[in-house]
Each structure stands twice: as structure tokens, then as C-alpha cells.
Image (tube, rainbow, N blue to C red; front, side, top):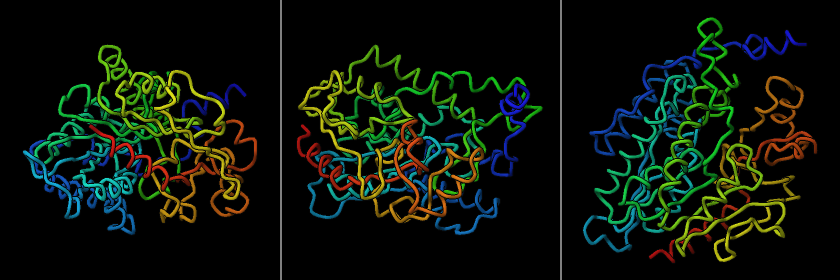
Amino acid sequence: MVMQRSRSILGLAAPPLEARHRPSGLNSRFNGSQLAFADYVALSRDMLRKAHSALGDTDLEKIVDGNAPFELKPPAGFPPGQNKIYQRGVLLTHGLSDSPYFMRYLAEFFQQNGFRVMAILLPGHGTQPGDLLDVKWQEWARAVAYGADRLAEVADEVYLGGYSAGGALSVYQSLRDNRVRGLFLFSPAFKVSPRAAYANMHKLYSWLIPSAKWVGIRPDKSLHKYESLSKNAAAQMHALTKKLNSLLREHEVSIPVFAAASEDDMTANTPATLEFMAHAHHSSSKLVLYTTDTGKLPPGIPAEKLEQVYSVVPEQNILSSAHTAVVLPPDDPHYGAAGDYSNSIHYYPDDMEKYDTCNNKPEEVLQGEITEANLKAGTLRRLMYNPNFAALKISMKRFIDNLP
């Protein structure tokens, strides 16, 4: 038993590494600093096409379209800015191991409400999981700073919106940038497991055992997010949140904040989100909290700043919301209720029977966050969409209408 566990820790029992688990050489640093945003998008699309062509991926244009940064302009009829072309703009930043695909529906919402929208691709993302082996969180921060600069060139009012790690990066930028007028945060990752601080200890021996560089080596079946996760990525997230929380102890968040989070989140620390929102003192700030117990009020959040949403949906076999379930609607063709992707990587490779059931027999599967209680309830698919997405947009519209 001891030998078996040691083999697992060292990576000897892990699935084999493939080409996608090595760096592409194209995507570990941010290289767009001097570019116009349209040129940055074009450069990124070329890089994505080159990386995925080298891997022999099919559906190449679909992959490039989903993973590429993008921009949207508001429709005619909205008032122009006083000093810039547009009155309001928002920069959207995706999460760790994800891509700009996850910001598409939010982008359309902001566009329809008069915002100039820009969405960036964080270095190391969108190409292959191996590109997160060497990246540093400062490169992610450089990408966000670049996006804020480009947005400020065309919009009077700059807002930042981020999902998961993108939420943390958005707050980090706002603390260093007095142009930022407000924040939109979705499952924000203000705190991760302390174990992530030691994730790069593998460097002592991973030259001998390359699989030791990985938290998990998985099939990477999703078109727009990595399933395999490198230990360096976890370590960089820990370093980012450590730096962010140090800054938050020194600076008050005085701008309006809209946040949406799951109380059952198993990736980001929900108490850290609640603490952040308790100190977001602007009168317009709002938290939408998905919970299985609407009778329990979270501490420190005034009632006027809180909207609780019951996250159990029995008719869809949904036991709770999840970290992964906030920013996408049920009708998304890849991750939605009838989508072609099933998030079942929590079973891989230790329980292949449940992994196969998740992927091939949706009628037998529950959905929700991968909490201990939910996993005990039956075979569980991690929920990837928000059954209350339409209501979330209404809450966001109300927040926008009340902005100063």
C-alpha cells in the first residue's frame, strides 16, 4: 500500500504524457503590449491555429473561434462617450485552464447594454495544457493591464469582469488602476488550497519523472478548456492570490462590485468571497449567492447587498450550483443541458465505470458541485451551466442601471 501510494505521488501510476503535455513554445508569455486590440486578436488567432494544427486537431476553426480573444461593439442607439468614442467599456478575463469562450454570453449581455467589450486570452491558455508548465502569473497580469489600456483608449468608463482566476486578476488590476469604475466577478478565486504553495516542489525530481509536474493528466476532451492541470498552474494561482490578499489588506475597495458565486464552490474559497463582499462598501455593490439553504444568511453581508438563489433543480437532477456553473446558460451547445461535453474528470482514472456513465448515460447522472455529499448521492457530473442564467442577467441589468 505504501509503495502504491508513493508511485502515485511520483506520477508513476499516472496516464501517459502526450504532445499536448509539453509546451508549444508559442504561448508562455504575453507578447501583445504594443498592439492595437484588433491586431492582438489577429496575432492570437494565428498562434492558436498554429498550435492546434501542430497537434493535428480537427474542427480547427471552431477551436480557434472559441479560444481566441475577441471584441464587440454596442449596437446603435446608445449615447457616445463625452471624451472617448464610447461611454462604457468592459474587459473580460477567463479563468484558470479556461478560455474566452466562457466569457461569450456575458460579452453579449454587456454589448446589448451599451458596453464596448474586449475579452483577452491569458498566456498559457487556449493552446495545450503544457503551455501552463512555465507561465508566471505576472504574465496574466500583463495581459489584463494591456486590455485595460486598450479599453481606456476608447471608453470613458472602464469596468473589469472576470471569472475565477480572471476575477482575482480583475481585482488586482483595479487596485493598481484608478481608471477602473467597477467590477463584475463570477466565482472569483480569492483563495485556493494552501497545498498549491508547494506545487512546484516537483522540480526536485520531475526531470526524472515528467508526469510529476502534473496535478492531473486527463483526456482533455473539452474544446475550450484544459482538463489536465499542471502543478505550476496551481502554484501560480496561489502566488497570485497571496499577492492580491496582501494588497487587499492595505487598500479598501471603494468602487461598485457585482459578484456571483456558489456557496458550494469546491475550487474557489466561498468564505473569502463573502469576506471580500463584506468589505465592498459602495452602496451599489451586490452579491448573487447560489445556495442550497436560502434560510441561512451569510455573515457580514447586509441584506440589501445580497440576493440568494436556490440552486437545487430536481427536474434537471441538479443538486447544487458549482464553481463551473455560473457564466454559461443552459442552451450552450458544448457545456449546456444538452451539450456534447460532460465534466466527469473527478472520476478519471480511478473510477472509469462512473466516468463512462457520466459521459454516455446522462439519464443516470446527477449534476452539481463535486462536494462529498453530492458524490455520495450517486454518479455525479460537475455542473457546467447556470439554470438561472436569465435571472442573473436581470440582476446584472439592475446593478448597471444603479451605477453612479
